[in-house]
Image (cartoon, rainbow, N blue to C red; front, side, top):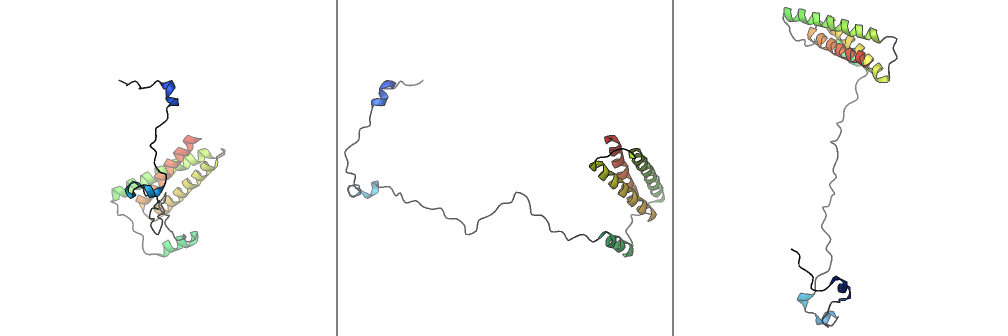
Length: 163
């Protein structure tokens, strides 16, 4: 419940506060009644801490030229190739060949069609995967060849679906 005011609202404007007559000088006021009004500045650390919205970027050395990297790979020590059983090797060969055929068939379906920039980039990636898969196959790295050919196949299927 709300309590009703002691005076009517219309008369409230005419009411003025009653003040006791006091001297306005600081000498007449006791020390304990005078507030300390001197402002105090907060102490700041000597160094401001800056916050980052993202972690700093790593510093990466410039990649070697395209020709130098391939020469270094060929002249380097023997490549580490996972050892597959004869059955696994045969299965990997078959899967590699099937994936390469499917990827090349899908690329043939895009010939003569107008492609946007993203699709042209996708075609170049597919061709690179096919080339790398064939190179891995010539090196008898069937696990890598299977993986690369599968990537080429999946990307080519996405490309054909987008046309």
